[in-house]
Amino acid sequence: MEWESDERELKVAGALPLDGGRVGFLIHGWEIETTKRSILNSSHLQQWEEKLQTTHLPEMVFGESCLILKHVKSGIKLHFNAFDALCGWKLEALPPVEVPAAALWKFRCQPTDQVILDYDYTFTTPYSGSAGVEKSPESGRGPPEESICSPHWEDCEEQIDMVALSAKESILFYDEVVLYEDELADNGISLLTVKVRVMPSGWLVLLRFWLRVDGVLMRLRDTRMHCSFRESTVPVILREICWREATFKALSSLLCQLLQKGYPTNSAAYTDPRSISERLPMAMRKTQKLIVK
Image 1 (spheres, rainbow, N blue to C red):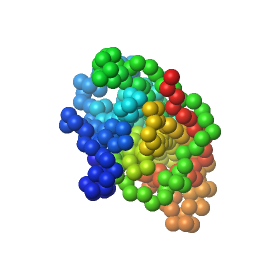
Image 2 (tube, helix red, strand yellow):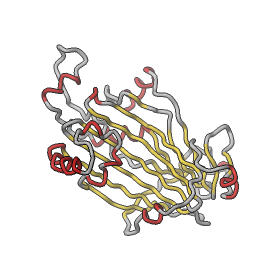
Image 3 (cartoon, helix red, strand yellow):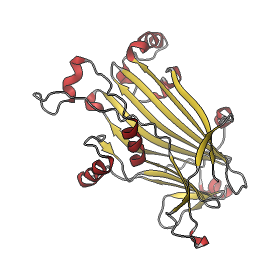
């Protein structure tokens, strides 16, 4: 985990290291834990293919990497992982993005192979995190990994106050976990990451899927979750989902405008979406609140 504060700030905030050799902290009743592992080996990839009923997976799947946030008192657990994200990809099953004919050969294993793109090779996912409630081991009602109910998200009018979150506030800790990545045979990038930022006032999570198919499409799917630290049995968690995308053809005039402002017009230059994200047309946006009954 990348610490952006000193031990004094953490101590003042009441943060305690997690036990059991886990990487993370307990702060204001929240256990915040990140796990980073290497990419899945061939045997694990085969197991995933069988479970997902597919023969296609991203080039790099960090299957054991994850971010977990657990509210100890209520048992609410938010989990961000590659397997659930790929389940969403498989279920959504978008049609494959058509690439320029001149670039199709790059998707071939052998020059003589016939090009068949009959699946979404971009691994676009609607995944916006996994939520559950764990039984408390102290309660004697069962093992900690066994779920007792399934929280659900309801649309709401409340909004995450991004202006307030943009105000200068010390960052107690920050980390980023890559869940999967594919360079689309040098035709772009497909990348799913999750970032967590913890401040004295609360935590903020950004789950981001970024797709760039060179010369064809840019797609950004962001999920933000925010929770303020309050003394409450059940915390208030807001989730904002925002999808943006545009074809390269539609972006061409925009990129020309950006050129005048010093932005590159070559789509391959946009390895990070931050420079263009707000300029992509919005396809969907909604805010939800986590409800536990």
